[in-house]
Amino acid sequence: MGYLDDEVKRLQGILDSIEARVKTLEESQFGGSKPKTAKEIRMILIGPPGAGKGTQAPKIKEKFSCCHLATGDMLRSQVAKKTPLGREAKKIMDQGGLVSDDIVIGMIKEELENNPECKGGFILDGFPRTVPQAASLDAMLRERNQTLQHAVELQIDDSLLVARITGRLVHPASGRSYHSLFNPPKKAMTDDVTGEPLVQRSDDNAEALKKRLATYHQQTAPVVGYYQNTGIWKAIDASQEPGQVWKSLLAIFDGDQKKASSAGGGILSKLTHRS
Ligand code: ADP
Ligand code: ADP
Image (cartoon, rainbow, N blue to C red):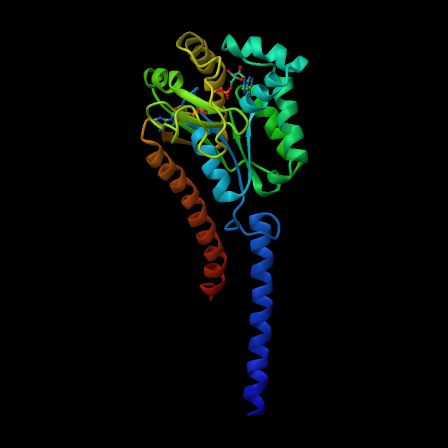
């Protein structure tokens, strides 16, 4: 009996130390004390005007309880307040050009540092739109010992965007968007949630769209190449109906979970198959 008790204690000791070792290995593998299965997200949505970034981002925000930072919404709020920056930005936005890199980089930095919602991660919508913005984002994240998990490109043919953009209706305060045909509000020109009026953006017309698309292909398409090189780029067919686009996004997040659990199992299986 004495021998058996001793043997059980000895084996228990070995098990405890293996468990502690596995925990340490998992923590170093997953960066910090949180394994990857914990819901945290750091991602960007890339896509031309009307691709569906603003439609999908709130759903991701709800799923992960993170912040949704849309540089277009931030700039429009400056325009609405008629700040000096807003006055300057409005001209550029209405012409379908891009506001300076420094301004939008500053806005994102400020939010990532001070917005408490960003503690649970972030979705960037409409940023980065140029390669220098992408490089600045990387530098910002490096300083925080963080990396991006996904750069998701919403792919769609230009020809489908005219109808989406000319029918878009927005609730300025929240950035919620509707469509007069594809996603109409319950009551005409009224936000479902607040009952406040919806508006059409001043740049949502066919002429400005042409320029915005040219700007996108010239300056933002290279951002796709940037993330293809880093290995975190994924593409989704954004011409599908919104529910299908959401399912494609979920498949990307499910892929994460599978990777995390098979990596965790990897350590254990290495231990159990050692002898
Ligand atoms: P869309 O819904 O068409 O993708 P956004 O609401 O993201 O447009 O942006 C509206 C406008 O705000 C852009 O056309 C551009 O002028 C300006 N803007 C938004 N984000 C950026 C950015 N990251 N860099 C430069 N300009 C930007
Ligand atoms: P972005 O933020 O990429 O500029 P939005 O999400 O605002 O685009 O979508 C542009 C317009 O198209 C909105 O009126 C929206 O209701 C509509 N829309 C978004 N996704 C789809 C979709 N998958 N199919 C049809 N219409 C869509």
